[in-house]
Length: 406
Image (cartoon, rainbow, N blue to C red; front, side, top):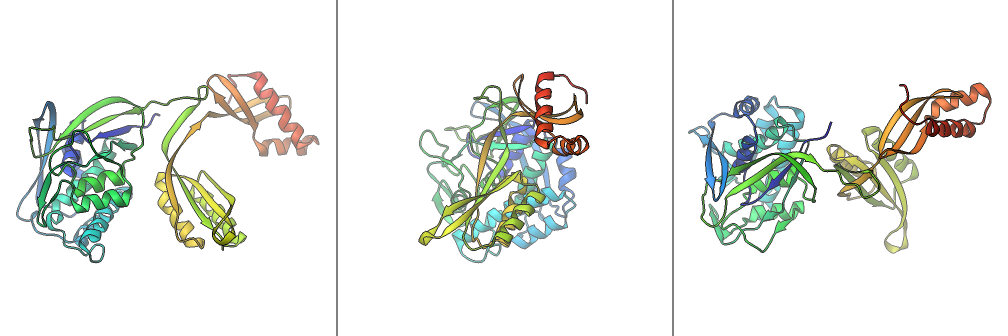
C-alpha cells in the first residue's frame, strides 16, 4: 500500500493553531481529536472551528478557547508531567516531548538559564500543550506517514511580545532554525510581522523534512491565522496525497521512505567493540552497517562507521554508537535511494523447488539470487558443489520466467 504523504505550504507562515486548522480543513474530526486530547489530564480549554477567508483563500480557523483554569501559567515541568501522565500512544508521547525539547532548548539559548527552567511567558498556558499535541495526534489520525514542508518565510517588519519589540522573526524562532538547520525563505514577497511562531517552528522542524518531492495530491486544505492582513494570505496550506516515484534508471523507483544515514569517525575503539556495534545495530533494525578505512588527524588511521536506518530508529541507533564507541559525535543526514522491485518466489528446478529472490526492473528480471540455506541442503544431499547448485538454480529461475507457483 502506498504511504500517505503530506506537504506544508507555508504561504503566510505557520503556528500551532494554523496547522490545526489546516488538518481540520482536510478532514480531521475535532471530536476524534478531543477524544485523544482527553487522554491527558489537562482541561480548561475548548476547541472551536469556523470557515474564514484570508486574502483570496477559503480556510478553517480553529480557536483554542481558554477558561480561567486554562489561562493559569504552567512550567516546563507541568507540561512534561502532563505528557507522561497521559494515556496517549508511546509514539505520540515521544514526539510531543521531542517538540517541547526543541522549544525548551531555544528558550534557554536566547534567555539564558538551564534548559527547561526558563520562564515560559506567552507559551505558559495550556494552548501550547494543545497545539503541539494536536499536531502529532492529528497527523496520526489523518494517516500521514511522511510530512514535507516548504522553507519557513522569514517575514518583514517587526513583532512584539512580553520581551518588547523585535524583528518579524522572534529570537526563539530564529534559534530553532539555527539548531535544526531548517531552510528559511529570504527575499521575494514576505508576510508582514511575525509569520512563524516558536511553537509552529518547533512542530514543523521536528516533524517535517524539507527536501523537494513530487506529490500527487488527493486533498488540499488551508488553516488560517487569527490576523487578517491586507498584504498577504495569513494561511498555511496542507496537501495530502502520495509521492510520485520517479525513475531515472529504467523503471526502478526512487525510494523516499525517510532513510537516514548516520556516520562517525573513530580512531581508538577496538575491533571487538566495532564488531559488537555492527551486530547490535543490525539487531535493532538497521538496514545496513559498514566500515570504511580513513585517515584522521595527525595522520592516524581510523574507521568511519556508517549506518543506514529508518527515521524512527535514528535516535536509538545514534545513542548506541555514542554509548558503545569512543566517538563524541554522530553525523546524520536524510538520503534517498533507487530501489528495484524485489520478490521471493519458489521455483520448480531440476534440483527441486527452491526459494529465489528476484530483482525486477520494470518487466525484466535483472537478477535471481537463490536462497542460501535451501541450496546448501541440496548440495549436501546431492554431493554437488554449492556454487554449482546456486548457478543452476539461478539460470533456471531466469529461463522459466513468470508466473511461478508459491
